[in-house]
Length: 202
Image 1 (cartoon, one colour):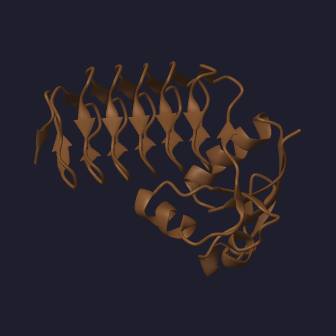
Image 2 (cartoon, one colour; image 1 turned 30 degrees about the vertical axis):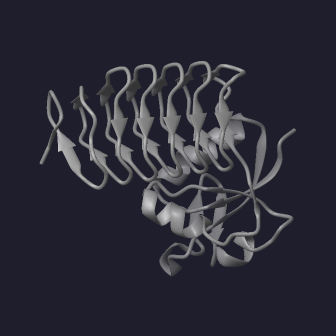
């Protein structure tokens, strides 16, 4: 059994992380959040408490960051001394050659093909598909239904919205946001917003 898990974050994204963790066999021992107004609320049967820092600094704690915002997730991970768990839904299909970074989360129905690498705290959301030899950096977020063809590189902190499609061999720069439904057919630089079919920098 994967054991006890501390979930950091208590928003909508956290609901899916908690459900995924339970499906994967974890016992969600606590949910912590830094927003005072969430303390004492109930999320999927677990009382929310806080702050998160004591858990993040506990080397014995097994933790996952249930924070959808990439920059916020990276900030919470920085300097942490806990053990970050990777959480994978049992319905996800992941080739044995795939390397999952610490704290990465893979939701229901996702498919990850051979020799792909996920960086720490990456999110592969519901029914997203990643083909062979892709590389996702730290704290990347692929929204539901994203489709990456083979040999795609996605830089640290990039966000790809619902239904984005990326053709083979394309590179997407760090911290870039690609809007929902876009088709990425050429490289995108770091730190931009791209939308449309084909995707163009806005």
